[in-house]
Length: 310
Ligand code: ES4
Ligand code: ZN
Image 1 (cartoon, protein in one colour):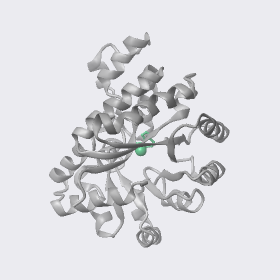
Image 2 (image 1 turned 90 degrees about the vertical axis):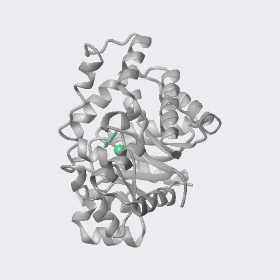
Image 3 (image 1 turned 180 degrees about the horizontal axis):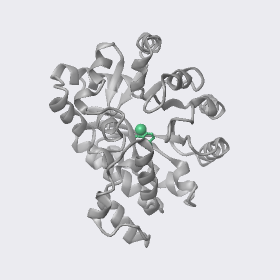
Image 4 (image 1 turned 60 degrees about the horizontal axis):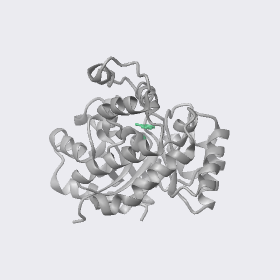
């Protein structure tokens, strides 16, 4: 069996732990609207994707310098490596930082510095994927992508994330065409809260090689057939889906139905500091609540390696 996990669906800003938010606020002199750690922690109860995104973006204001981004990434690598992650392809949201005045060069330099040391420091093979924030203007996405290229940021791919419904993949055809022309890999969040139609669009209009989440694909048998035939990976995040109320409980999670349908699913953490855990915690929860077997876990791990951009 392939050893360890390939973590393919984690947002580096979503690994910002509450204690680190307070520590960075102190270091950078940022005023936060939280009384203390308990007050901050009390806000981690979400009703849907948007309610999470509001807190996720608000907490990012503590990230200001290249050092902050490097520290964030290193803390993630340390925790992920302890949990058995041997390769990580993490997302970052350039527009979440440029839109509040943090230069893209700071973000890219800090993350790139951490990535460059990941193998020697943590025994982990790491790559980064810039992600378009889909509920911001299309023109901004194009500008920021152009700037990433000009900076020579060491990205291996382009993703699409943030508020899904009302922001279909079709809006971003041009920027993804440019990414493919640059030889970058392409992945997109689709079918998390949005309809199967968005998964079709991600495949046909963006050229997505993977689908992040994709759980609503099960509503469309023709789409399932396509995903199975072409063996398109779906990076599923069970604890995320429960915390954002995309599924009611872990016991109701469609993961096993997806496996049984022959889909190329793998398990990931999404925003581990917000949703109750890292990829090892996701597996532990699935073993408890979904009675995931050793064989099923092996298949999921193998699928993660097959889906990696290697
Ligand atoms: C995200 Cl859970 C989720 N969905 C969509 N976009 C995101 N960005 C960070 N976490
Ligand atoms: Zn995600």
